[in-house]
Amino acid sequence: MGAGISGLATAQAILARDPAAEVMIFESGNRAGGKVETESVPEGYLCEWGVNAFLDKSPRTLELCAEVGLSPLRGDESAKKRYVYSEGELHKLPEKPPQFLKSRLLSWPGRLRVVGEVFTGPGGKDDETLAEFGTRHLGREAFEKLIDPMASGVFAGDATRMSLKSCFPRIHEVESQYGSLIRGLIKLQKEARRSGKKDTPGPGPGGMLTSFAGGMSELTDTLAGQLGQRLRLATAVAGVSFEQGRYGLHLAAGSTEEFDSVVLAAPAHAQAPMLQGLSDAIAGQIGAIPYPALAVVCLGFDRERMGPGLDGFGFLIPSREKRDILGTVVDSNVFPNRAPAGKVLLRTMVGGARQPQLADLPDEELLDRVLANLKDIMGLAADPEFVSIYRHQKAIPQYLVGHAERLRVIDAELQKFPGLVLTGNAFRGVSLNDCVLNAMKTARSLLPDSATEGSPA
Ligand SMILES: Cc1cc2nc3c(=O)[nH]c(=O)nc-3n(C[C@H](O)[C@H](O)[C@H](O)COP(=O)(O)OP(=O)(O)OC[C@H]3O[C@@H](n4cnc5c(N)ncnc54)[C@H](O)[C@@H]3O)c2cc1C
Image (cartoon, rainbow, N blue to C red; front, side, top):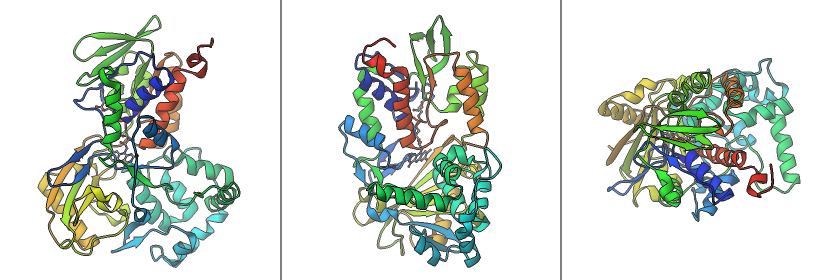
């Protein structure tokens, strides 16, 4: 249920394991894709209203592309260059430790405090906020200027409430294993070099931004196309029941269909009402996952007239700057085909966990505020030739402190319902890569190897 990337990739993975499986996918909207939605506008721009790209470091998404015959499009190498806006200036984010020491983003005491990270280790809490973790390891200044914008960039979140271990489990693992992140990174880099890996782990996200020539919808449209009649659009699910080992899916239109297994891949806020009655405990847990509003503002400019412009991926803004925007991606630098020749496409995010009300501003005021910020920050000198605004009333699920405990309660309760899987980006990773990885795990859990090989379980 739900034809976003989670539902589509799950259906694909089930059929890849067992082509004879009878799969049906119900989607309440008139199109498949969910938060993946590309629009090609008459002015020649390719606008992404949700997912912009994925990082090619996850082999599963690339495998999925190969399986359905899609050729991914790697972003421009220059997109590795990212900026942070701080104290009136854009600072290039250091990619390597020597650059870090030269960067003026942090004061000298701030830089020395970061170096002192080698003497830090885990705190006493099992589940702590990103702010507590970042301040303990890197000091307050580095937390505010480096970690806090990362919370905005990935989750549009509030670092003082987000759970480090649920949002960034890899960082949590490095801390648990090595104590200090710097010591851990040095050891991991040595191991990677010893085993001849090309990409050694670094402080950045790692991997290249990747999409498709026709934008991200190419992936979800292709998956939807291959499902054919198995995908039922404009068919909302209202509830789920469980009787004598079979699940009933109650459609909003009134009928009920029966299945052996049910995978719920709608957003958590949509899954919660469906589960009321079946498991009020799960419904209560997942209904409490917050999804703050986010507006995506796409602006097209003439390159000659727009002013100095910006190279690289774009910039993020620490919340201490108290700006109206979270950051801006220069989409046409990353994927040049997203704007016509001589034009530039900017994509600015507004709202998120700290200022959700800004995502609801009327169009004119929202645009005025975005343009005023871009003038200040990147010296914008002209009005846009193209404007389009897209609003996600419920955008990205927030993994707050207590999220891991929430998952534990849900998993324990799910023991009562064999064949019922809750998936989607609300649980174990918000990125598209995480959704695809979880889809493969779901398929494996429903059709374990012994089942696909036809031997008794
Ligand atoms: C603005 C924005 C930008 C993002 N950018 C990136 C990015 O660049 N890279 C990245 O990796 N991730 C990004 N993400 C995160 C990304 O959205 C998710 O990882 C992923 O797309 C979520 O997919 P999903 O299938 O889990 O959920 P969704 O895409 O939300 O799909 C859920 C589907 O369920 C359907 N549904 C809801 N209710 C019902 C019902 N009652 N019955 C049937 N169907 C129902 C919905 O209509 C929808 O189609 C971004 C998110 C947002 C909001």
